[in-house]
Structure formats: structure tokens, C-alpha cells
Length: 220
Image (cartoon, rainbow, N blue to C red; front, side, top):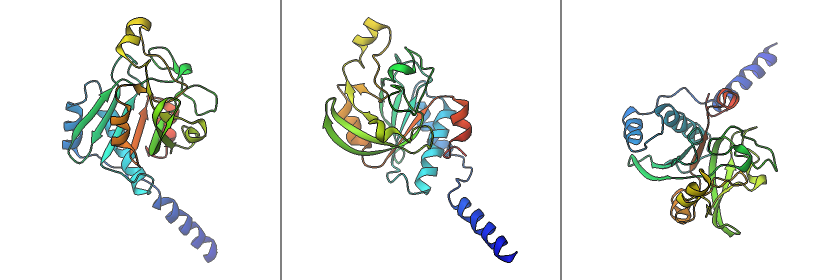
């Protein structure tokens, strides 16, 4: 019986070691960043900061100075990618970003972690290394949310530039062009953004999806 109790206590302690305590982000930080990011809701920003801090506590995010938030509840015609410096409390970038071909037209409605889905995945990512590929200068991403984006590496979900992410595309299509699931940005900015966030910073890909919000390990 003593051995069984000891095993239960050990299991609980191990679980607690990886549990993220409920946290309230610094109000001055949230207020400052929100004031610089038109359209980004305070609740989404708080979730992003908490998720990044949770992953950092587990050693999954090495760079805690920079946080990228993509709010896919906003239409593709609106700049919905935000890069923040959490040390200086500054917005560094606010840009257009495409979603996957099968995630919707101008407004997203479907997300997937499955290979060949051509859809965007939700959840917390960490940035990895860069390379030159068919889409030019690109940034590899590792999905940290089990069951929601952890197939990103195998799916080759990366950040890259694309000509279909532009005001010209919006004029012609009424929306941005769409990727195969990658967070594609304007072809005028990829190197600046990628060099700012590469090497272990967090990207928080958001949509008010009930299943993800209730099951993500980084939101509880």
C-alpha cells in the first residue's frame, strides 16, 4: 500500500511539474501592446502571452523576448499577424497573412492537423531554422500543440513570402490568395520578419475553436 501511495504521489508531482499555473499577464504589458495592435482583442493577446510563458516554463520556447500572434478570426483582408517585443513593449510588425486553401475564403472556417489537408493548423508553434526553398527565404516551424499542430514539421508548414499576399490580390480576388497551410506573408517582408523571430520564439495561431480552447495543454 505504501508503495502504491508513493507511486501515486510521484505521478501527481510529475504531472504538476509540467502544469502551467494560472497566470494573469502584466496589465501594463497587455495594455501597451493592445494599444499598438488595431483589431487584436485583449483576450486573445492574454491567451497568447500565457501560452508562450507556459511553453517557456517547460523549456520549449527559448526566446521569450519576441511573440508572434496570428488571429485567424479576422478576415484575410485585414492585417492579422502581429509581432511583439515583450521586453520593450513594442509592436514590431503588423502584416497580412494567408491561411490554407481549405480553411476558407476570406474568412476561415476549417482547421486541420492532417497531412495533405491544405488547411491551417491552430495552436502554439516555436520557430526553428531558415532555408532557401521554392518560396524563397523560409522559416521552419515546430508545432507544440499535440493533436492540433504537431504535424506541422512533417507537413512542411513554414513561414514564407508569397505574391498572393498583397493589396493587389485583394483587389482582384476580394481576399488574399491562399497557401497549402503555411502562414504566408507579403513577398516584401519575409526576411525582416523571419530574421526577427527565428531561433526559438513563439507563434500563437488563434481562432475561437472550442475543441482547441478546451484541450490545448498551453491554455490550461
